[in-house]
Amino acid sequence: MPGTRKGPPPASGAWREGDPLGERRFVELDGLLTQSGFQFPSLKVAYQSWGRLNPERSNAVFIAHALTGDSHVSGSVGPGHRHPGWWNSLVGPGRAIDPGRWFVVCANVLGGCQGTTGPSSPSPDGQPWGSRFPVITVADMVEVERRLTDALGIERWAQMVGPSLGGMRVLEWLVAHPDRVAAAVVIGTTAAVGADQIGSHGAQIEAIRSDQGFRGGDYYGAAAGEGPHRGLGVARRIAQLSYRSRAELELRFGRTAQVREDPFAWKDGQAGGRFAIASYLDHHADKLARRFDANSYITLTQAMSLFDLGRDRGGVEQALSRINQPLTVVGMDSDRLFPLSQQEQITALAPGAQNLQIIRSLHGHDGFLVESEQLGAIVRDALRICAPPVSRP
Image (cartoon, rainbow, N blue to C red):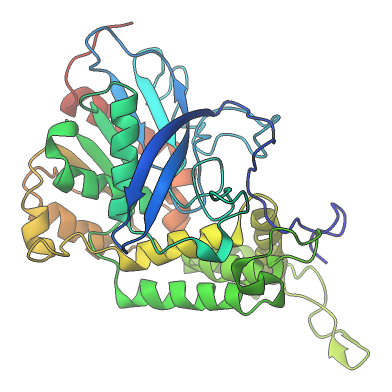
């Protein structure tokens, strides 16, 4: 079974108060009234930064992470960080976003599980928010990021870069706070989440909620192996299939690929073997359960389903028509989660959008993590052409 060698997964893979800080820094913010009408008395934001802000404060780049990402964009595994930087290929010395020139910031999103206020964080009574954590929206997340921007003394981001859920937040920034963003790059995202995505999200959420270990969302005191890791694992399996292309999965795990165990083998009246694709999905399910939180997965997935840039703005077309800043829109040609048609819509309707940049990839939506050479060239060009000149700190 997955996880046997490492021991059972924890009840939650969240970073918790008292854990090693790693490279995290924290900002305390005043209360927030969410769009759902919930009042947070206070908030904490965890972020990381690379490079230095120049005297003109004109070289700041914000990276908005995707669903299960966090502030650890660049760096290595170590105390406080269970995985290497998720965009090491893009952020670092000599790479497209070079801290030798840019002051780079990435914050763990509101509702996340790596230091920013989320369901696993302590509430005013000292207990985790758990089931009491409210429904939040992309706009709520952006409001928290705006306040962090103020706390860091940054008037305007020279560039914002965001894939997937991060791209949704960048679009919200461009429309809600156009004076705070000079230019932007959005990757594999949409201006409004559609029925296909919402349906997949709903199945993933139901998988977690149906797990007996979920306990209605209040599972943080459970022992290892007794949390909702099975439900979270099923959710990850569903999502992973949409993250990768059909062609890639067929090439790696199709009928002609090696089967790890004989799927026709029977033991005690049940099928005892597994197809290779099942082993692959098991691996990703176990890996996520050890570094993420089930409540955060639900919270952020719900926020994605709710995302519609045109809400209360006269529709998507009207909202996108407000984007006049230089905007680089990037899509993956094999993306099944957010297909090219959704990036084509952004490009067609946003006045500031350049020609759609298409990454040719076998890896589907995950191309933004895999195709470092293609994406690096696009981001490098966006920084050179779209952003204002910067001086070295």
